[in-house]
Length: 314
Image (cartoon, rainbow, N blue to C red; front, side, top):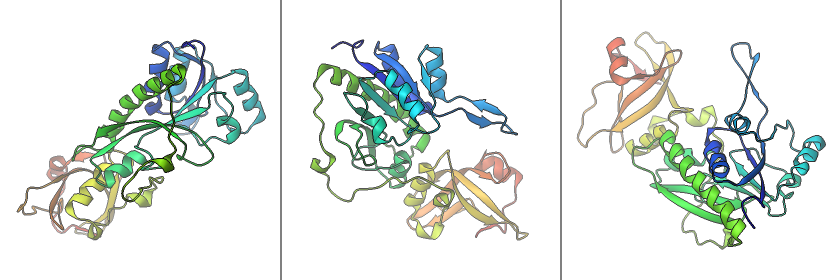
């Protein structure tokens, strides 16, 4: 079998999914169609439609685009069947019903931004950092009836630095994932894929989940954190959606404060003001922040324009 013999349908939506699609297209693989989310209303009055990054890439390269509202809709299923895909590749898309993922003769594989079976769920990058992991990676696996539980094809790991935030790790995994998707497709063509059931993998310790992150998930409860765990929490949610807490100014007004970047101060450091938080194990310095309704700014800019004497965390 050659690259052109294997007909591929690619499914994805955000920026994270574009490099893997590009790796296939630029590598000469036969991508016959793309499935992505419907255009999203944007603008002040929600009267403009914005195409997904994956759709924009597909249109630039003359690839047919399908944008179903419902994945079980018979009209969409007929369109999908008409593409006669041998393989479907999923990167950062929706949960697929069996009628979709079981359609191609070679199956459907997904790229997951973690080292499965660890961090199954919607937010693996964030939770790996929040939990203080020093390593993460990407995994390709065949889809089955349960979320993120299918047989693993291949995994590749990468280091998480002690100060890396979610954006840094996201970009690192995006590039690594593109390589892995391309290599997984080639291995399927070459017939050398040997999937391993996740239950057969030797994993020591507790399996960590990676559930979807909501606003309440992002609240910093300072009293529950050591200096290192608070630092991990902030960088795991930075730059988006952003960890937050409530502050009260000297006049009694309460405001939401987003904490976007922190630094663990050297041992023995003394706090200077509200933006140096004393926690178990040391002092955490807030170096980038954003008050509700204001722009994000550095610690220096914030203190230059704001008197924080008398302020306190609520």
